[in-house]
Image (cartoon, rainbow, N blue to C red; front, side, top):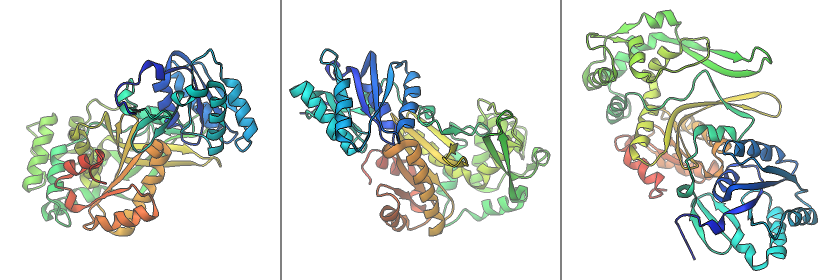
Length: 441
């Protein structure tokens, strides 16, 4: 028996018991879908997952679900699990069990406690979240579309807030929407094993001399604790030199498209050459508000776009144009505090959010297999940390045999990875649409 539209009131409960595992996302979704307005939640966790329960308790408070209580159990002790869950159930209180998280033993013995108290009603009140089909499935055979039933889609900050050890880099907040999408499209359409000679010659002559080798890393530390709270790589020359830089627009179709699109964005029509400061002023809408980090952030972003980040903006623009996403971000930089106290800084090139599901895209203009596979390994690890098993991961690169890389990566990294190559660039929007909709695996 199936039902794909709204979750009926008799499936929503006054008291929801959640089994807690390492991935908080399914429980966050279940809490928003299944708890009635004034209801309460009990988070059944082990010592190893108590921190996940505490993160969830804080997160639920953002949605005015404030009656949330962690309950520790011994995850390998059947009787301890059974007794703890049994004592949580009140026959006079409408109670549900959600068991996507937790260990197999926790699920088995929590079910046993439910059956012993609720009898035939237990299957109607027990559910799990299918990470691939994105369905909330009940033991009585009914299932419901999880994304379509969310009161509001998740935002990027929701995923961050589910992990107390994770935070965004305040020096470089993600960009949205994409910059110069039509110029990026023209670059993608012009790709024939490499970029056109006119563009390469222009870049080598006018922009490459502005690169800093090696780059510098500037840390932003909390004055009180000394803790790293942000960072910025300075890949370009000092700010005064960049501010003084005015170069000719590139020749050919790409240059004409670049100038036309900048003027549409607000670039002064009377400027015949490309001024980096004016270009940033036209593109940054609304202006970013950032801490006083060292380095000339704004103009560097224009230079980075001209070097290779145009591909990230092209991918983001294609995702936006599919109409399938609630939000799309470029350059999501995060800091992960690991157990040993060493912060791990990483960036996700493009992130699309659909309901509670992350689509994470890694982008590179490199084509050699080792470089491409390294990018895939990195993005898979970080995407899973942020978006759990529900995250979908893809790479857009310029290799002309992406299917070979995809096959190897599915065997060694993740069986659901998707790799798009140089031949996909011209029609990337349709290829991404098929992938997101599940028509292209």
